[in-house]
Length: 262
Image 1 (spheres, rainbow, N blue to C red):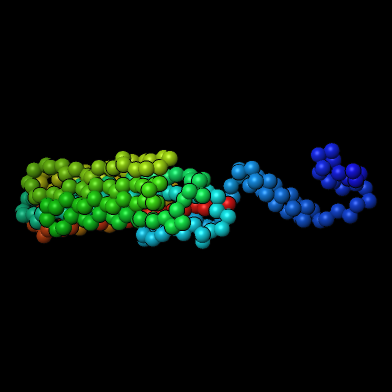
Image 2 (cartoon, rainbow, N blue to C red):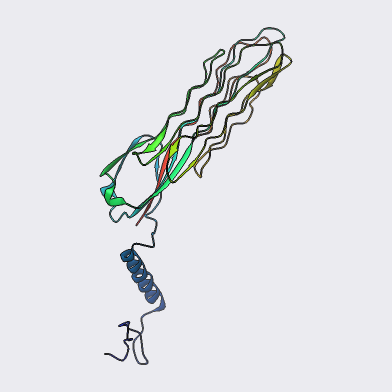
């Protein structure tokens, strides 16, 4: 056995040896450590920037040689805000806001069983209610094959005109999803008419998860605002007296984000 080899067959320098520069030593140590950890099935490392699906498509496994794990984030499309009916003198209208999409995530390590091509669906946000007493539409679900799915949020209620006080409910956040962890979408805010005048339109709900967007703020009387994409609910319309009908804001689209690991 050479003098500079340990009983475990690990070589080390002894006096008189020519030693490589420290940066080379540490580089070799890091690479050999990663190789050993990979052989043991542990020690994942990121493979560049995450992959963002802002439209539906496919994930092709062969495009990423050395892939060992995927962290999937899915956020469903949000619900649209409700529309408002036209008002006369002494009347008001305030519609409910849309709910945000559900968030689901999974850490997938069985890459060998993953299909060669996985269908990725980005759920679209629901349409706002049309001008009049019309509810907003429900957002669509986002998914990564059959392994991860996140449903869309429900739309907010439309508003009729009234000369009294009235509440119009926001859309409910769905709890439906598939993954290691699922977070329910947030409920849209209620719209309130106070004593026949515009009180408060319903805000859209903020989306859960690291890639969700915040809710939209009240914009005063007028048509609802589109949800802050991705996954934020649309706001409901709001009207003071003697105003034409307005539509609600559309819900924000969902998103699917993949973090890849070697």
